Length: 254
Image (tube, rainbow, N blue to C red; front, side, top):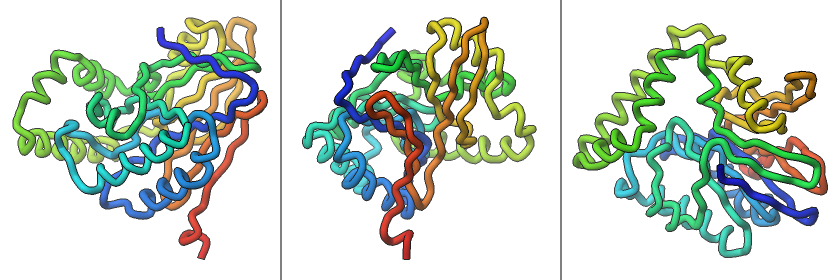
């Protein structure tokens, strides 16, 4: 299990579910402003999955992806450590793009030891166990052999397959009960128990909230991060305290 430890002087930011793509320019503006503003002043930035709406491979280069990589690299070069956890949309983001962007890939879940206790970071999709069809799909596409086979195909075919998967996923969402697309509490409790009852931070569900769960007599917090649109919501940890924050680009304030 990969872990990270930080001291009292750190300011850490957590974000997830930006779903960046060229068709969402307001979200792109929010990210660029966030990176120039709050992110440039922190010590560490954690991206907990679905940074991009889709990813067909690191060789699928575009001016848009180069722009995003350059913005992250600028922040990294200023001294901010950036860590990225794959989500259900961008799990194929690999070492090549991570190097270009100056970000470190981390496992899901990821343990983080802070001055006020232990934290556990996750994208959150593995906790939605009531969605049996999705969990079967997740198991398939997270298999390294499957990924190697997929990435060995010509880029044009991969792009087509990714678009087909996206279209099918959006269609299936409209037919699923909303409850099965949220986390399963038994799965949450198992994860908390396995990691010694930490504070759990995750995204994926697009249902931002702070929850408290009593597991084996231990009180645990679960914080669900917000998805992005025209603004940039984020969670900030500093000097032992957590705060919900939001960066609003100037263009969105007009």
